[in-house]
Length: 140
Image 1: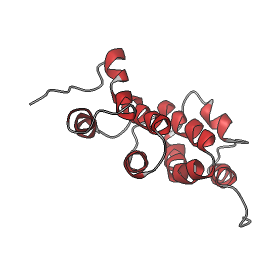
Image 2: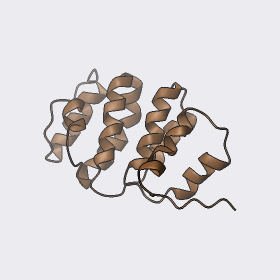
Image 3: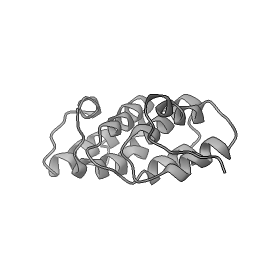
C-alpha cells in the first residue's frame, strides 16, 4: 500500500483482505449487523479515522451499535477518557459504550455515573437506562 493512503482507505483495504467489501465508512455504518470478524478491524482503525476526520469517526463508531457479538471496548474507553475531542464527540462514544454489545463494563459505567463529575458527555450513559435495563446499578 502507498504511504499516502488515508486511514479510511487502509481500513477498507484491510476489510477486503478479510472478505468484506466496502467503498467507504458510510457503507459500513449502514450495515444492519457488523460481523464479529469485522469488529476488531473497525476498532483497530477507529482512533486513526477519528484523527483524520471527525465525521467519519462518528459514523464508524456508531456502526459498532450493530455489532454481532460482544467486543472489547478498551480503545473506545481510552478515546473517551484521554482524548481532547469536544463534548458532542465524547457523548457519542459514551452512547455507543452504553448501548453496544460490549464485554461487561457495568462497573465502568457505574463509576462514570456515580463517582465522576456530571457532564454532558456522561449523560449518554443514562439514555439506555430509560429505554431498557441493560445495567443493574445499585448505589452502595
